[in-house]
Amino acid sequence: MKNSIRTKIWRYLILFSIFILVFLWIFQIVLLPSYYESSKTKELDSVVLSISRSYKKSQTQKEFFLDVSNIAHKSGICIIVSDTFSNTDYATNSLSKECLSEDVFNQYKQKFIRSDKEKDHFLTINPLFKNKTLINSLKLDDKFYVFASSSLVPIDSTISILRKQLILVTILVLLLALIISYFISKKLSNPIIKLTNATKKFGKQEEHQAFDIPDEFFEITELAKTLEYANNEVAQTDELRKELMANVSHDLKTPLTMIKAYAEMVRDLTYKDK
Image 1: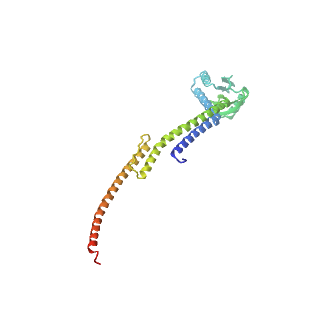
Image 2: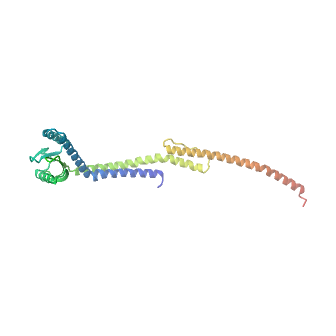
């Protein structure tokens, strides 16, 4: 039946499973590249912030460069600290894919320094490895500038693997949803169906109908108790009705019998008297 509670529960659980799967497909396949880029940007922001804090608390330049080296080693990010007074660059992880080519870096460095910005983000193609590279710039003071860069590893193969995996997961989840939702809907609807059948007999005023009160669901238990109470009240009312009818019929039968007897006597005595 289209509008039965079992069908609707089954339908809603299936729709909920489909919604979850669509949600997974959107976030794991469609939004994964942008999420990956956003995560890398936040990672660079965190690294640059750590360098800024280290610069403020370091007592000597050597101590500061040591902190920068440790940060670069832990994060795996290419970090370049530029000294504009001596026109020298202190680089870490300079041979990794995270660093830009010297020409591209120098162009961007000069552009950032001339812009007089406190910080900046930039996305470019690294000509050395033909990969996208994010670079985060920060001005520490008039002398030192920090440039932290990280390559965006192509995730096409990762997305392809995730797509195949999600196809299998989708099929499995839909099958499980069909089976589980069927049993859940059946378990929820069976007590209601039993109460409905018992109520139909009660409505037809058949013999006293005992309701099987379930104890699995509070609402259904309360409904069964209410119907049982109504059934008992109707049964008592029916007994009172029968008793009332018996009393009324007895009270009416006695005078009617006397009237009938007197009428017959009058008829027998006076039937010749016109």
